[in-house]
Image (cartoon, rainbow over all chains, first blue to last red; front, side, top):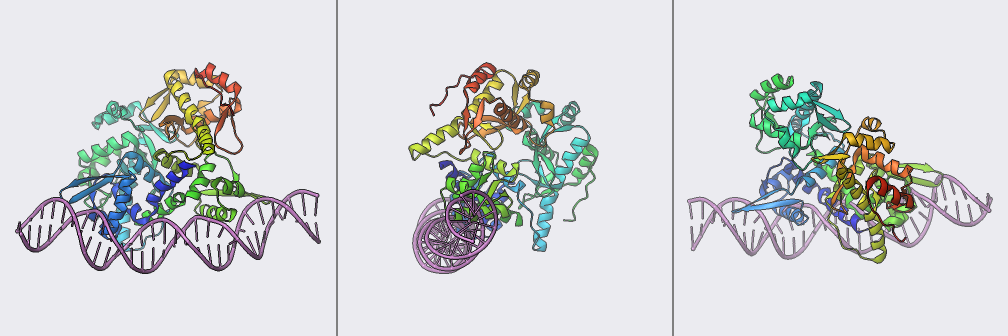
Amino acid sequence: MAINSNVSLIASLISEPSRAAILSVLMDGRMHTATELAAKARIKPQTASFHLAKMIEAQALTVQQQGRHRYYGIHNPEVAHVMESLLSITPLTPIKSLNQATEDQAIRRARTCYDHLAGNLGVRLTESLRNQLIVEEVGKEYVVTQKGEAFFANLNIDLAQVRTKRRAFCLQCLDWSERRYHLAGAVGHALLERLLELQWIERLPKTRAIRITPDGLIGFKDTFSIELTETTT
Amino acid sequence: MAINSNVSLIASLISEPSRAAILSVLMDGRMHTATELAAKARIKPQTASFHLAKMIEAQALTVQQQGRHRYYGIHNPEVAHVMESLLSITPLTPIKSLNQATEDQAIRRARTCYDHLAGNLGVRLTESLRNQLIVEEVGKEYVVTQKGEAFFANLNIDLAQVRTKRRAFCLQCLDWSERRYHLAGAVGHALLERLLELQWIERLPKTRAIRITPDGLIGFKDTFSIELTETTT
DNA sequence: GAAACACTTCCATGTTCATCGAAATATGGA
DNA sequence: TCCATATTTCGATGAACATGGAAGTGTTTC
């Protein structure tokens, strides 16, 4: 069956640890240069170039050239979705170094899962939304309640506009680090963007971990009834 | 990052054409013997044994022994979901033989997508449900309308019971052969089971293609307003 | 225009892995 | 008990692929 050989071709893109590392970095939803990706994947630039070309050819990534720099990004949400699917069934392994433990901890605490919030923060936000009856769980989806419509309006998130997007509206996404669900889909994306606007969270330069700001600590406590502690970094 | 090496490990299970072929066969939702899977994947039994052992160890498959036969099946819906994700972004390739063309055609016409109906039949059923306002499209999900509640009740599908299942309720699944959406999730599963009960469709012995029965032709016309033609097989 | 930087291409090397023939083991039927 | 079938194990083989050193190309800075 011709279909199988193509499925294996796509899967083979991710099966190589170096390419998986590159894709993982790009799951922060941003564009990165070839040199950055080489460093993050701990391979030489020529090896990175080889892998990047392969993923460009397979249309898993896109590239934009600006002067001497080539910026690489994930081609479309479908590719990110495949990565998320794989991450959701991937077993965890023990940590091997202190530095790695620190980064892993930051990643577990709060991170982007391509275009929505994940990690302990993502999971606790989702639980708060459920506990306050802002969303209700139906199977593996969430339905926004009447109270939720008001809640998001107060947060300045226009749900009517969110509903027009051609994507899952309000899903559960299995958080591989917490082994519980966080909120994904169009609502998850809108929430992430709004929290960045409010500057309750901020992106960090070299990682897809997310930092919670002092304003965020207050905002999450007041709005979501979540007590968080700031990291000592 | 330790996570990446595990993502690549999982992806490597599917990256091998033989294992992809085995998984594809098992996407019919049934259990198959090692000898059957070897034949379908066009490899020797010892090669199949090697691959099956690998996928058992990785908990992608399960095995049940009955006498001299070993029956293999997909371990859980999460694994099937990963396969579906990969299939949804896999480009199609040209057909290489007439026999393959015939089977491909049957697969395109109607098949199981692990636990729901896919192919041209799946897509047309979904379109009919939308056109008759039985379901409404919200992003990449479907919401069952008031009229839909009655429709499914008439078809003897208990939606209240379906809603209790711990899975996506009513999703779009991108049909790789039609390049349009068919209905998946718990409702998709319930619909497949009901159509089998009604004997409007039936499973075929050696393929995940689905056959439409003469009763089915009448039922789909009366209930879904779909004109289908029976294949000459 | 030269130097530095970002990135790619070429080539050799080493590693990994899928494959099957042959043989062995386990189970069922006559 | 013997034979057939299903499946697994062992070992050898060949192919595929990731890697980095060296060199080359394109762009930016001085």
